[in-house]
Image (tube, rainbow, N blue to C red; front, top):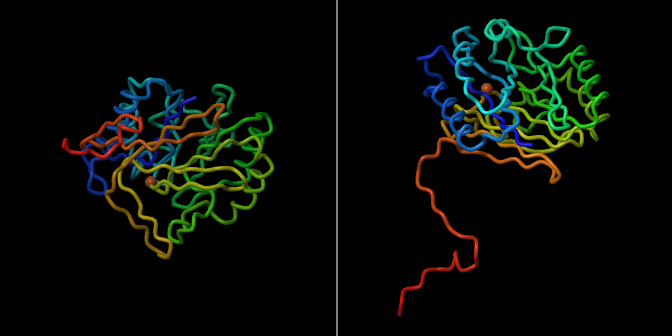
Length: 275
Ligand SMILES: [Fe+2]
């Protein structure tokens, strides 16, 4: 199964820039690249920060951008999103019985679980008891799952970033739940950090993906301030199957030179001038 993972598109009211760039153009470039190269994807999953300021017009622009795509799109909300405006633009979007934008589906034998890690008026992640109960029911009733969410649910060794990870009081109970079901969870995928971060948590591998806009610079000492830069964006292509999980980072804005070469030994031999 092929899954396209896009995150942190931070759409604005069309015409407004964000962080010095046009987020709509960047998102359109990413989708165009998906159309050109990944028509065989089973899902396109966008893990939150769909908009930057949560404005209704930004969600309408998102809805209009999600047309003529090769496969279904799954949306998650992030700390920059406004659930009310999101649900106004996407009124039929699924949610759980408590109103959180949690939902799940089975695709090619794997339960894809889309978790709502947001709370009102905070950039910090939350996953309360009601949401944990919902997740537990999902994990107990499916023996193979893959989790998608906006926030990193674990600290990642960046003091400033970790201030807006999953809130400490929700962390231990979620970690216990994940540990209990680690054999059923293939991978944890998230956005939020605007950078590729990989590791394991509760014995489960995890990976984040860059933003389609600005990227964050990993600073292992800075205590207070997040640092960003207009470095190249990317999205991820996730391949799953008998070989496990393979994740490719797709630099969709690259328009510079591309060199080609064969893979035989002689193809990489040093050029020697004719004697
Ligand atoms: Fe973001």
